[in-house]
Length: 184
Image 1 (tube, rainbow, N blue to C red):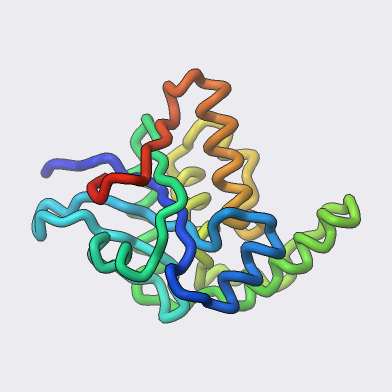
Image 2 (tube, rainbow, N blue to C red; image 1 turned 45 degrees about the vertical axis):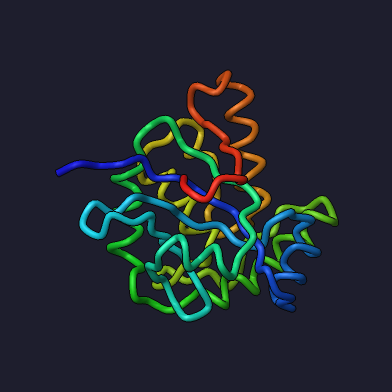
Protein backbone atom coordinates (compact mmCIF):
# COMPACT_ATOMS: atom_id res chain seq x y z
CA UNK A 1 0.00 0.00 0.00
CA UNK A 2 1.31 3.46 -0.88
CA UNK A 3 1.06 6.29 1.62
CA UNK A 4 1.17 9.94 0.71
CA UNK A 5 2.07 12.75 3.06
CA UNK A 6 -0.81 14.19 5.03
CA UNK A 7 -1.04 17.97 4.96
CA UNK A 8 -2.67 20.23 7.53
CA UNK A 9 -4.66 23.04 5.97
CA UNK A 10 -6.36 26.18 7.24
CA UNK A 11 -9.30 27.97 5.67
CA UNK A 12 -12.15 30.39 6.04
CA UNK A 13 -15.48 30.32 4.15
CA UNK A 14 -15.77 32.18 0.84
CA UNK A 15 -19.25 33.48 1.80
CA UNK A 16 -20.03 35.22 5.06
CA UNK A 17 -20.54 32.77 7.88
CA UNK A 18 -21.31 34.22 11.32
CA UNK A 19 -19.72 31.32 13.21
CA UNK A 20 -16.50 31.68 11.19
CA UNK A 21 -16.44 35.44 11.76
CA UNK A 22 -16.85 34.95 15.51
CA UNK A 23 -14.10 32.30 15.64
CA UNK A 24 -11.69 34.52 13.68
CA UNK A 25 -12.48 37.59 15.78
CA UNK A 26 -12.38 35.77 19.10
CA UNK A 27 -9.14 33.92 18.35
CA UNK A 28 -7.55 36.74 16.32
CA UNK A 29 -7.01 34.21 13.54
CA UNK A 30 -6.63 34.46 9.78
CA UNK A 31 -8.46 31.13 9.55
CA UNK A 32 -11.52 29.71 11.25
CA UNK A 33 -10.96 26.10 10.26
CA UNK A 34 -8.23 23.42 10.28
CA UNK A 35 -8.34 20.17 8.29
CA UNK A 36 -6.29 17.36 6.78
CA UNK A 37 -5.55 16.94 3.07
CA UNK A 38 -4.31 13.66 1.61
CA UNK A 39 -4.18 12.00 -1.79
CA UNK A 40 -6.54 9.02 -1.97
CA UNK A 41 -4.96 6.33 -4.13
CA UNK A 42 -8.28 4.52 -4.63
CA UNK A 43 -10.13 7.56 -5.96
CA UNK A 44 -7.05 9.36 -7.39
CA UNK A 45 -8.17 12.57 -5.71
CA UNK A 46 -6.94 14.95 -3.08
CA UNK A 47 -9.38 14.53 -0.20
CA UNK A 48 -10.18 16.59 2.91
CA UNK A 49 -10.78 15.03 6.30
CA UNK A 50 -12.45 17.55 8.57
CA UNK A 51 -14.43 18.07 11.72
CA UNK A 52 -17.39 19.94 10.22
CA UNK A 53 -20.69 21.11 11.67
CA UNK A 54 -22.33 18.00 10.16
CA UNK A 55 -19.72 15.76 11.81
CA UNK A 56 -16.28 14.38 11.05
CA UNK A 57 -16.29 13.76 7.32
CA UNK A 58 -14.35 13.12 4.12
CA UNK A 59 -14.91 15.21 0.95
CA UNK A 60 -12.97 15.94 -2.27
CA UNK A 61 -10.50 18.84 -1.91
CA UNK A 62 -11.79 20.40 -5.13
CA UNK A 63 -15.32 20.62 -3.69
CA UNK A 64 -13.93 21.92 -0.39
CA UNK A 65 -12.13 24.74 -2.25
CA UNK A 66 -15.36 25.84 -3.93
CA UNK A 67 -16.76 26.92 -0.56
CA UNK A 68 -13.58 27.75 1.34
CA UNK A 69 -10.65 30.12 0.86
CA UNK A 70 -7.42 28.31 1.71
CA UNK A 71 -5.31 30.41 4.08
CA UNK A 72 -2.31 28.06 4.49
CA UNK A 73 -1.24 24.46 3.94
CA UNK A 74 1.55 22.82 5.92
CA UNK A 75 3.27 19.54 5.18
CA UNK A 76 4.76 17.93 8.26
CA UNK A 77 8.05 16.45 7.12
CA UNK A 78 7.66 13.58 9.56
CA UNK A 79 4.92 11.03 8.96
CA UNK A 80 1.62 11.75 10.72
CA UNK A 81 -0.30 8.93 8.99
CA UNK A 82 -0.46 6.81 12.18
CA UNK A 83 -1.89 9.67 14.22
CA UNK A 84 -4.32 10.70 11.50
CA UNK A 85 -5.52 7.11 11.13
CA UNK A 86 -6.20 6.99 14.87
CA UNK A 87 -8.16 10.28 14.67
CA UNK A 88 -10.18 8.85 11.75
CA UNK A 89 -10.94 5.65 13.70
CA UNK A 90 -12.06 7.67 16.71
CA UNK A 91 -14.09 10.39 15.01
CA UNK A 92 -15.10 9.62 11.37
CA UNK A 93 -18.89 9.76 11.18
CA UNK A 94 -19.22 11.20 14.69
CA UNK A 95 -20.77 14.52 15.65
CA UNK A 96 -18.91 17.82 15.77
CA UNK A 97 -17.79 18.90 19.25
CA UNK A 98 -19.93 22.03 19.58
CA UNK A 99 -19.51 21.94 23.38
CA UNK A 100 -15.72 21.88 23.03
CA UNK A 101 -15.84 24.73 20.54
CA UNK A 102 -18.01 26.76 22.91
CA UNK A 103 -15.65 25.87 25.76
CA UNK A 104 -12.84 27.48 23.77
CA UNK A 105 -14.48 30.83 24.66
CA UNK A 106 -13.60 30.13 28.32
CA UNK A 107 -10.01 29.27 27.33
CA UNK A 108 -9.74 32.48 25.27
CA UNK A 109 -11.26 34.62 28.04
CA UNK A 110 -8.66 33.18 30.40
CA UNK A 111 -5.89 34.05 27.96
CA UNK A 112 -7.12 37.65 27.74
CA UNK A 113 -7.07 37.81 31.55
CA UNK A 114 -3.63 36.17 31.58
CA UNK A 115 -5.00 33.05 33.25
CA UNK A 116 -4.89 29.40 32.20
CA UNK A 117 -8.44 28.08 32.18
CA UNK A 118 -9.31 24.62 30.92
CA UNK A 119 -12.00 23.88 28.36
CA UNK A 120 -14.93 22.78 30.57
CA UNK A 121 -17.00 21.20 27.78
CA UNK A 122 -14.48 19.08 25.89
CA UNK A 123 -15.89 15.74 24.70
CA UNK A 124 -13.89 12.54 24.27
CA UNK A 125 -16.50 11.29 21.77
CA UNK A 126 -16.30 14.23 19.35
CA UNK A 127 -13.71 16.72 18.11
CA UNK A 128 -13.61 20.22 16.69
CA UNK A 129 -11.35 20.97 13.73
CA UNK A 130 -8.06 22.11 15.24
CA UNK A 131 -8.42 19.59 18.08
CA UNK A 132 -8.45 16.73 15.54
CA UNK A 133 -5.29 18.04 13.83
CA UNK A 134 -3.43 18.48 17.12
CA UNK A 135 -4.47 14.98 18.22
CA UNK A 136 -3.00 13.56 14.99
CA UNK A 137 0.33 15.27 15.73
CA UNK A 138 0.32 13.98 19.31
CA UNK A 139 -0.70 10.44 18.32
CA UNK A 140 2.14 10.46 15.77
CA UNK A 141 4.67 11.47 18.46
CA UNK A 142 5.44 14.59 16.47
CA UNK A 143 8.31 16.58 18.03
CA UNK A 144 7.11 19.07 20.68
CA UNK A 145 3.45 18.07 20.16
CA UNK A 146 3.47 16.45 23.59
CA UNK A 147 3.27 19.99 25.03
CA UNK A 148 0.08 20.82 23.09
CA UNK A 149 -3.41 20.67 24.62
CA UNK A 150 -5.73 19.66 21.74
CA UNK A 151 -9.04 20.75 23.30
CA UNK A 152 -7.61 24.19 24.10
CA UNK A 153 -6.12 25.08 20.71
CA UNK A 154 -7.82 26.97 17.92
CA UNK A 155 -6.72 27.17 14.28
CA UNK A 156 -4.42 30.16 14.91
CA UNK A 157 -2.74 28.38 17.85
CA UNK A 158 -2.00 25.44 15.59
CA UNK A 159 -0.73 27.68 12.75
CA UNK A 160 1.50 29.50 15.26
CA UNK A 161 2.89 26.16 16.47
CA UNK A 162 3.57 24.98 12.91
CA UNK A 163 5.16 28.34 12.00
CA UNK A 164 7.40 28.23 15.10
CA UNK A 165 8.45 24.68 14.32
CA UNK A 166 9.19 25.60 10.70
CA UNK A 167 11.43 28.46 11.84
CA UNK A 168 13.12 26.56 14.69
CA UNK A 169 13.78 23.49 12.59
CA UNK A 170 15.00 25.42 9.53
CA UNK A 171 12.09 23.91 7.56
CA UNK A 172 13.18 20.34 8.26
CA UNK A 173 9.99 19.39 10.15
CA UNK A 174 7.36 21.61 8.55
CA UNK A 175 7.02 22.90 5.03
CA UNK A 176 4.54 25.73 4.46
CA UNK A 177 3.19 25.69 0.92
CA UNK A 178 1.91 28.36 -1.35
CA UNK A 179 -1.87 28.34 -1.47
CA UNK A 180 -2.07 29.73 -5.00
CA UNK A 181 -2.02 26.37 -6.73
CA UNK A 182 -5.06 24.10 -6.65
CA UNK A 183 -3.15 20.85 -6.14
CA UNK A 184 -1.40 20.16 -2.86
